[in-house]
View 1 (cartoon, one colour):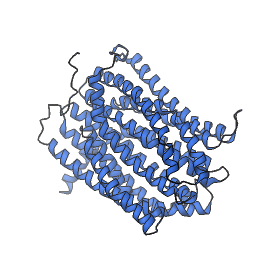
View 2 (cartoon, helix red, strand yellow):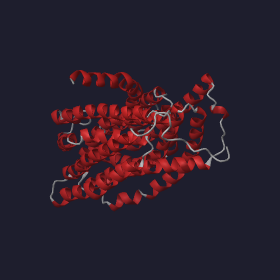
View 3 (cartoon, one colour):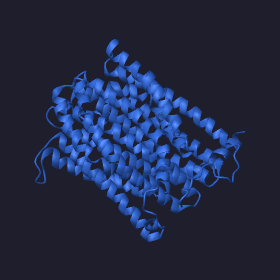
View 4 (cartoon, rainbow, N blue to C red):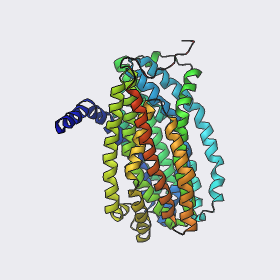
Length: 471
């Protein structure tokens, strides 16, 4: 029995873990680079006078922007399914058509999201947030808003490239963009290189410039790759294909809704904590940055799972799709389980990276203790979401997030925060309960989905891209 298990494990390592890690590693680095931007912003404004107010302003502005921008970027997740299935089937031309129509979708979506964000500014005033925080949050939010279109186009090019196993350019774009953001923060926040010091709003402009840079890097690489290998990108039909755009929306809308639900619940939590004062809000922002940083690793693995599962199904290999999903889940769970132990062991050491303030350190450390308990399930739910997306299922994760976050986690957290008197820690407990339940539920639904693969023939693609009748 032991020999059989050892042989089975070796089979998984040889056939899937290696390719999975080769694809996931640069995507993980890219996700960490994405989160590092927010961490650097928080750390650099945290050195300003009135550190708690500056950190709180960046927290509020950033979470409100992300609640819509990331939901909009979620519409591009349909590219994970379309591009990976087409690439797995050997149809690179179809990958190009998905890219072109993803660009058109971004061009139409960006103005809508930008106007919506401007219209949501009064919501910050409605929550009776401390005026010293609000006066910095709104200008910061407006600066971020100008980076909406570059951000959406970055996501389009990223999904296209990683769906064809070209993940290293994505990693390079994020890592180098952090240097752009760091220099921009140094120049604009504090007043260097001939610029005047503009404080927190300078951090917003720096992030906006970095996102424009990220989009440009991926665009240039896509054109370079096509020029070098003659893949046909420059010859693809450039007029919009509304049938394909609608297909992207069909696949991406549930994923966008899921991101909106997930980011939105933390946006609401941030605004509610903002009513408690600048100190709890600063602690919340630091703790949220930390757990978001650990979350970036399974998020990168999730993207790799979507691609590997999708490519396997595209080439008619349901067994390979099952193996890809379970391998990704094992890697993600192992990492996040370890991170849970780290957050329990050294929370204060982590918080000191952000700020020397003893009050903020105490506030953030108590929240990291709660965050430690949902690390494992957060990793499971993230990777399972990617595996399901590779199989063309973007609705299940949306429903689970909607039910457990909004129907259970947020009401419970608000009750513990304001009625029981637990403050910010009460809100985190409610969200912790929701994340644990989401992780368990999505693991179950992935298990059901992969069992259905067993009855499929190994030569027929499980999912195909419908052709436009005019082509």
